[in-house]
Image (cartoon, rainbow, N blue to C red; front, side, top):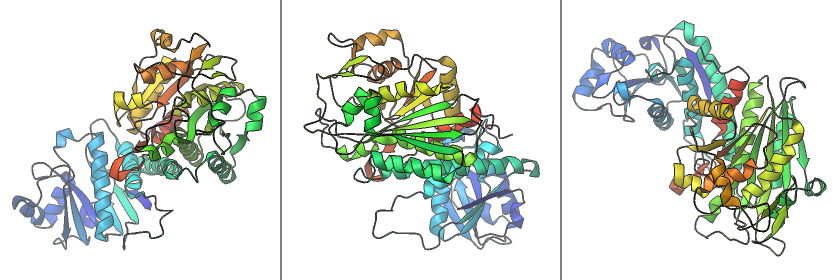
Amino acid sequence: MEFSVKSGSPEKQRSACIVVGVYEPRRLSAVAEQLDEISGSYISNLLRRGDLEGKSGQMLLLHQVPNILSERVLLVGCGKERELDERQYRQIISKTISTLNETGSMEAVCFLSELHVKGRDTYWKVRQAVEATQDSLYSFNSLKTRKEEPRRPLRKIVFNVPTRRELPFGERAINHGLAIAAGINVCKDVANMPPNICNPAYLAEQAKQLATKHDKVSTHIVNEAEMEELAMGSYLAVGGGSVNESLMSVITYNGAGDDSKPVVLVGKGLTFDSGGISLKPGEAMDEMKYDMGGAAGVLGAMNSLAQLDLPINVIGVLVGCENMPDANAYRPGDILTTMSGQTVEVLNTDAEGRLVLCDALTYVERFDPELVVDVATLTGACVVALGAHATGLLSTHNPLAHELLNASEQSGDRAWRLPLWDDYQDQLESPFADFTNLGGRAAGTITAACFLSKFTKKYHWAHLDIAGTAWRSGANKGSTGRPVSMLTQFLLNRSGQEQGE
């Protein structure tokens, strides 16, 4: 897909299709008014006849509009002008791209990037349009023997900006949007891969491939033998029931020289989570291939980072493992010794994500990090609390939490902060070990983060629980690519590259 920006009058556009907005009720946008005047009120006459009300997402494709150079004009319903917000804007763009892809228009000039979205500038609108376009066109069909493709798919789209002064911001938005969308697609591809293909070794191979593509990236794979030497007893216990070796992939991006402390991203990579001895219910168990969504998100963000060539040091850790029931599997009642030396009483083997993450969080101390963010499909309780709309955010460091929340709002990849008070730590008390791996049903997302916080005393740390946002269920089942956009925005901000204007 080819993207570009330009600043031009709608009547001068010669294209397969020109895209303009119509507000509710039947009110033409400024650009649509210009086209209507040139066409001798052709468009407004259609609207008066009731062909399009202007409700958000409505589409009306016109052919051979009088005096218009473009072959087609696509009228897009944008709802009420004053109510057009970020979410609705992205939805409109997605619906527009899907429609264009089905019309046979192989190229289009889109004026929706000139719509007024409260508090958002040209950079934001163009970048969101690029990301929404790539998301709309994504499909995972690499394992299908018969692939259905549009006969004449959309191949080129031009976003129009109001003035020539805004062209540099639009061009920058396209570069950023393409890099982020590429990382999102990497995340989706890896997460959607079935668990008989995507195991810890597969994750490690993806990490190695990233290093071969970019000079500033290097990769180190920590195998089980090295984990034994490091006394990562908790991590090893979780993978003990699987024939697939646990592998932790450490991806280093050096964009700021050796003197700059790294930002560390740690992603939970349970390539399949059966629940272990505490076996999960059979319904929708296939979706437990998405329990490596955190690792997929970190891998995607590292891809975006490398493509953007940001002046920052970042280490991405993919905590690869598989949780299976077996004669060698760990059991409820076991007491594990973590890499930190702290002991954990296992109450439920399905609370395994925190048991691999805790050793990874101890491991990354060696990098003397500026900060650490872990990303994990950690708790069903987060789905109950926040649904599929917001990622759960918990942190022991207020400035870091605020940075991540700001990045989530900028990117549209939203997060919501939950408390991490010491009051909740009591739920993890154990009569036999330092603490348990389960805090009970109440406040499950918070007690899981409380568990992780016991291993993060030596640096600033935040935890992202993406259990509700990493994938969709149902007929449109698949990875969402979240939170790549939020993480990349966070890194853009950290490296001073965030400003569109």
